[in-house]
Length: 104
Image (tube, rainbow, N blue to C red; front, side):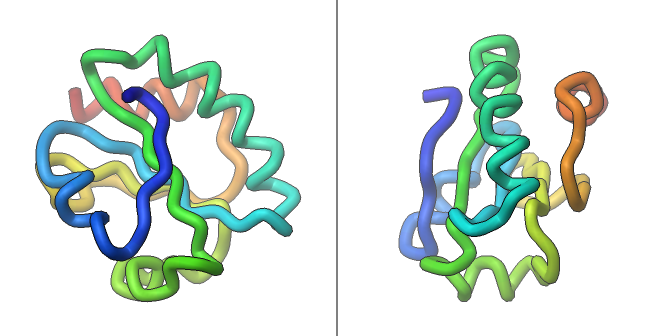
């Protein structure tokens, strides 16, 4: 369960415990397409430390609005349901891994 999709309905429950990096994305977003394979590669490497969730902002506008996502991709790291870090735009794998390590 390292990489999975979330939606407005179950969002709070999905991120409620542990570390979860949430990728706020959309299918038409070029940088989102660039970061997707990086997240897929990172997911097994962080198994046991954190999960990675993807939230399509076109289909889940309430959650995107609640966390003030203005640009995509936006990645927000949640710890036990609370946002603890946020990065906007394309990020290299090493930077995302370091972000997770900082809060693990």
